[in-house]
Amino acid sequence: MRAFLLALAALGALTAAPAMAQRADRNVELPVVRSFHWFDFVAATDIRAACVPGGRSHLRLVYNALWEEQVRVYDIYLQPDGVAGLNIGVLEGQGYATSGITNMLISNPRDIFAPWSMKGGQRILTVDETRELLGLLEESRAFGPPKDGMRLPDNDFWWTVASCRKGVWGFQAYHYPTDGFVNVKFSARLFSWDKVPIPVNPPRKLEPAELRRDWNAPLQRARADRWMLVVGKDGLRPR
Image 1 (cartoon, rainbow, N blue to C red):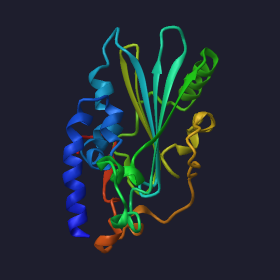
Image 2: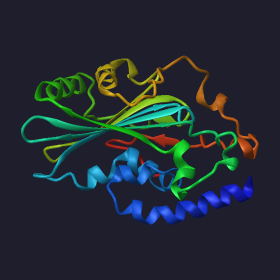
Image 3: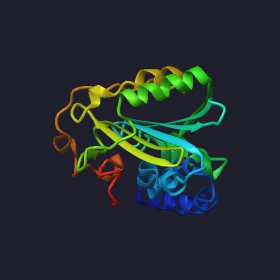
Image 4: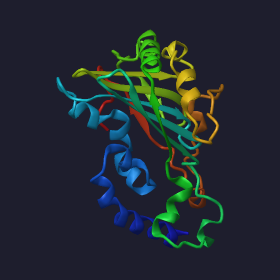
């Protein structure tokens, strides 16, 4: 198993360089590349860096439905004519190595990452749909400011919303079942447009996150759920 994981790392190094030259979502499509870029992706450092007057209006919403179970990402590109492009990405099974993967027959080196790669979809939102979504985001106070010091454990349910609208940066976060998660008004509409064939993992009552961490899990279970994000005054705090 150790040799197999080393082989994964080597293959990841081979695929990382081309991915890093692509747009931000490409940096998180493959699992090894994702490990280097995920926190910046959720923080939307790319959107913030490009957020200047006259620049593109771009929103990124991340629904963390327990990292080891499912994550859904929605990148929304607002257009001058009132429509919007919606890119959808879904991750699942990030916490465990797939059973029997060492016996896979691989014709393409990238195939080895298929069980953990992001599944995607796209949609054009009409003017009315875009207006509706922006209204729901406004109702949810999705453009900030966030609660400074909020903690977002990997093994909890939460949303983050990063936005640049007409050169104005905004950020918000919602942690279930606390910190205003009940105020999320946009999720049902987004999920209705999400046709990626992986059912949405809805929030459910759980023990506190720290009681659900298995720090002594054996290597073959390959857990990847040992991180925490902390919200600052206008975005995620640097890690």
